[in-house]
Length: 104
Image 1 (cartoon, rainbow, N blue to C red):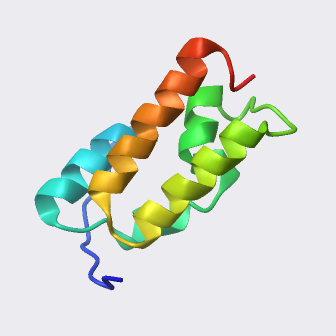
Image 2: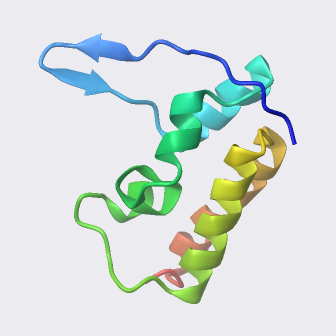
C-alpha cells in the first residue's frame, strides 16, 4: 500500500467552491501517481462518495442496495490504497449499475 499523497488546489469561485467529480479526480490521480489526502478523506463520507455523487446528494437514497454497497466500498478501498486504475474500473462498474437501473 502506498502512503504517498499530493496536495491539489481546490478551484474557488465566488460564492461556491468547485470540487471535481470522482472521474476527474481518478484521472488526475493517475497522472500524479496518487490521490490527495482530501480525496482519501472525502471518499469515506456518504455526502461526497462516488455513489452519493451519482445519487445526486444531498438527496441520496437509503437503504443502499447490495450493488451500491459493494461498489462504493471497493471504490473507497481503491482510493485509500492509491490505486487509480482499480478506482477507474470500479467507477465504470458503478456507471453500469446506474445505467441498468440496478442501483435503485
